[in-house]
Image 1 (cartoon, rainbow, N blue to C red):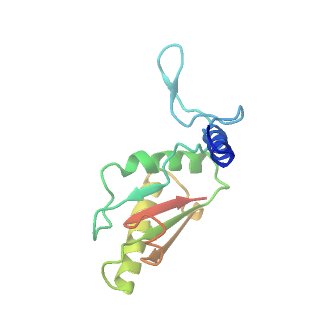
Image 2: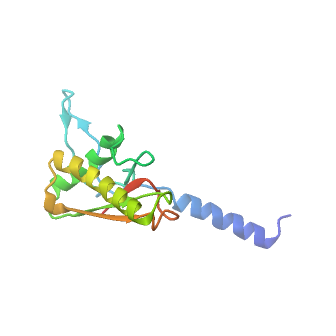
Image 3: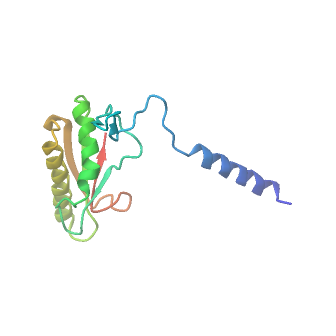
Length: 150
């Protein structure tokens, strides 16, 4: 027989696991393309969804966009173009290797790389704020990255 404390803990854990499963509310639309009856691709309303990544990860000591960054950034660009009143913050992060000044500059270059791609995809420059935290939050955020936030 399980002690009362363990059965309560197990019950609580089960409830939290079920409650933590993500579901879309009826008002949320999928941001992925859908097709019509003839197979033509239709653009759905641009609504952010929890399944979209908000992190672009870079190689060590580099501000060059990785080859897969368009997958992440394109969905944000579609959202921003469809919602011109929204702003995005691009936070550049660096690892703790190197000096603070160098890492700050590298974080800013990474933010600017993501910004350039957003601009190329049609986002208004007034919607984009870039910043760098260098290595300051490397213990808390993915280092060598740009976090995309609203």
